[in-house]
Length: 419
Image (cartoon, rainbow, N blue to C red; front, side, top):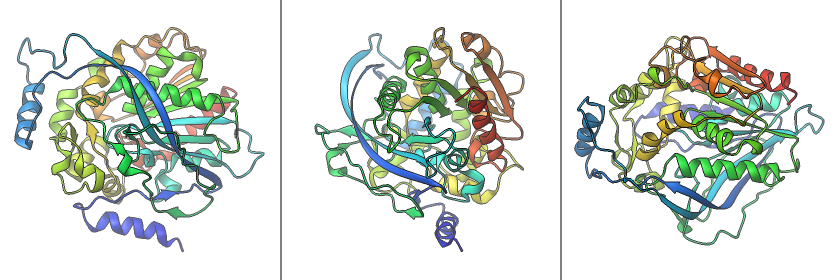
């Protein structure tokens, strides 16, 4: 009997008011390594130049103003961006098949999660046979690298020169407690600063390091790298293909759509009714100490309203998703739309774009008639562009009953393209 899984589910179901720290689950048939990776990243930041809210009422009023049709609203940013180099420590996990003869073992899938999640989105410990992408990829012979984006989980801005790399022994079985390392030497990046540009630069650097055979366990230098993103993770993955196309071999964008006529951010904000994250009792530890630039939706029903589609989900899975959610920076949300200005004329590798049929966040609840145009034009240099609709699925694709169906589409696409 698999008691650790039952314990996780009980913890999630027992209360909406207490956040469950997602324990580390090792995918079946995998050898995994956890890393803390030191990076020095140069990026151009948009500088926030609007009011910073002090209370949830202030945030509510700001949301009302943002979604309104008031003409000539001023930009929330200064006219001149700021360019700077900053040190970060990025927490990551690399898993590879135990079977060293696995056919696709030397192809590494580099996975970036979206807003409201951490790296466990790709490695869900709750009913992993249904919801765990990493476990599925391992079963198909692929290796996978997934990480906490900056400001989430264990990935932070450094107050020190990060010259010590944490490399544990290989983890081969079971569920393990999440361990925080050197947290007294890390600083939360402000929610008024964290945005697309630095997240994109971090992902580009991770891809470069992996390409050079760093942080890849026993694999060494991989044969190929395929980026996969979900939602905001797709935004920054798209950015890598646009600005550093030679660092990757394939691009997979999930929970995503580039037809901006179907993207209704004001409606999404209204549906979320966001609150300042540090005022929400669901968040504990470092998440409870965030500045007011970090926000979140308030409860499981706002989560379901924007990430799920009935009847194709189990309520227990939605509760687990809510119990393991993470705050996100307000500027991450505001700058995500800059992706629509990302031309991708030099990326020639295969591109797979996947949307849930009923994705509310990127398609206003219906993706079928918007997924191809203008995406096929934006990725016209790709040797194989494919758009796929996952039936009856909302934005939180990995938490739906048919998640393994799209997992198979992903690995099948990679195999078809010789990866």
